[in-house]
Image (cartoon, rainbow, N blue to C red; front, side, top):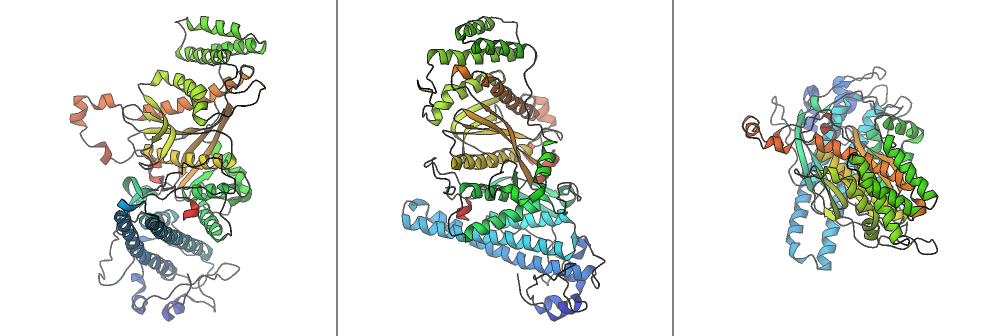
Length: 603
């Protein structure tokens, strides 16, 4: 953003020969574009609603006062606000074009034209993001200490309405002193929308080379739940604890680094690989992936503070399953002893006797039933997963699921079927859009509210695994956002866990939100399902992780309102307000930010 300042503004902002955009050791290259002369001829008090902002002047900069400091910021904001109507018109034109082409999408010429228009508009949205980040960095480097949470809310409102493109720019309060003049508008109250700019993953070949980018298709923008709150309610704490040592918020570092990586990838000669695409997609979705410790991964964006940041997150979230204790541990130890001595039939007979005992707990019965099913499967067919030479068979993704994962998970969740339902296969999720699919979803039985997503894959191909991890974190972010909008207690647990399963290997993957626009992708326990009877000892760790996963799902399901109580006639009479109109109780609901599924290569 370069250009010339008006003479009046130069006279107001200069001191001993240097412009106001001054670092303590160097002169910034960022200057303002010229605005209409009539704007600067007005009184400084009408330059941009000074009373709406808290700007603290740095005393070390001579000649800076409340009016001159605010004028620099107000001028930049006016430039960006001018871009909003253009973006909205362009998006509406594109949606009209898409509607016209609805009946002839199969025509390659029309499809190419539509994609070209969408790519151009996506570029415009990205440029708006970069301009806003440059503005914030300029303010930071100048020494203007803004009420940062208010600035974030304004920035989010501009971005979301630009990218949403389905409505006109948000209404802004006019200054009653001079309605005929063009003034920056008040953002004291703002309806913030969570937006899923979704496009479903391509169902093509999963065994792509690492150098190939993520292949996804364009999809229309879908609006998620929305709620309204004032600035005072949005600002949970102006002094956010999620900052780096240099004082910059982690969320701002994440956003600016993601956009810089996107620009670098667009200027590169070859398409970015799946690793780069994953970092960009997660960064634009406000997710810090704590597992991205690969070359040029997200950890490089935070430098030496990455380790301390991870430690701080894991101090607040438990991702370690609890080991089995008591009679459960004793029975598993005994089964392992049988199997280490190759006494598999004795182990089966022991489990069969234990299954006849009706006095044991539900957990004990489930553990016995799972071990019996696994041992019985291998005794019936020792070559279920390996051939006679001990080499792994090339099975399909669905074969791995049907043979071992699905039976075990169904047994684990069998005692809470009245509470949740496990849905297998490529089922459509309602959190992100009607076109997104997940390999396994767990939903509330009566409310149909999603509580977790899981991704399965056939083989550990790096490109496929990285894409699935990125997709899993983003879809479970949508699950988390939708869950926070429900009528749950203010102290309800919010961490959403999912499973990423590749063949017989799996890992718990979690996500939670800690600050406004700051989500963390969590690495949980890794485990494996046994491929033959000699590896039956791996089943203990797998069950510990899966029961940890189940307990998390159960707690979130219980936190939702009881539908039976809501159907009570007294409840319907005395609590007749539509729950969808109620404001969410959980304080993290005000932290929600959009999720992006569009492939970076298409931006």
